[in-house]
Image 1 (cartoon, one colour):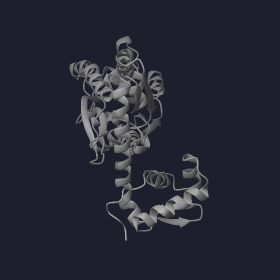
Image 2 (image 1 turned 135 degrees about the vertical axis):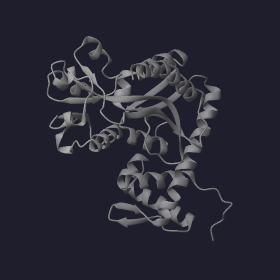
Image 3 (image 1 turned 180 degrees about the vertical axis):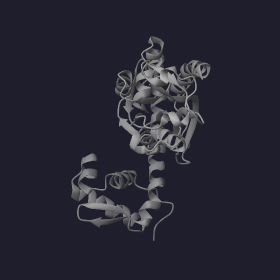
Image 4 (image 1 turned 120 degrees about the horizontal axis):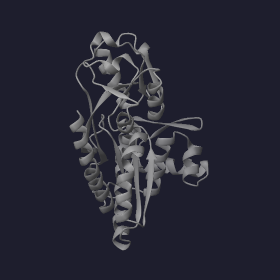
Length: 311
């Protein structure tokens, strides 16, 4: 019979979460510097300890059972709290040292994260910053898995285990070449959208799904959409008249000031989105993470005011 007072073996707990994530005994074993046989033994011992099969074996692969699915969020939370305790004790001994792991979309990394990081570096010159450029949904998942400390991203659906810290809102607009017929239109009508090639960012991104839903409401079929994986590529294609871009004002600020792009308001309900920082709800932020969040708020408050002024 399982002793409820007996502490769970942390090494077996980590082996369990890695196997659940990798789905492969060999990959999980390699991550822990173990042999596949030692990995298998550790999992069997853990299943005995838990009193229930946690994986279905399918050759070299493993799939969580119903019991394993129930255990996984508890295991991830326990390991996250253990890591947090270690980091907090370490921070007491090494003020200003440590590692802060940040995830953000490429657009944020390019346009406003550098200003935040410059200020942060002045506050914590000995802190190691790990920046991962990923889409919003991946960033949120990495925070939930404990593999990233904070995610700077667009607001999207996320689990209740995470916390949202709002920074600013922006409004997406159409952008065209100065030679495009829309450049001289004061007010765009829905009929003007017919047959116009619309260029959006990667269709799988949260922002692109917002754009697609808004365009669908005004009758633009998906067939008229071109998807690119680079904001800079979208702007260059729009400049030479190959389509109409859907972008944020802060992405096109230089081009609109130079006159190489012209903004055209969306003809229906504005395409608005919210930016913020995601953290883990049940974990107290370190002083470095709190400072990073504060700097994001400070930098983007001015940023947001400029955007609202243009809206």
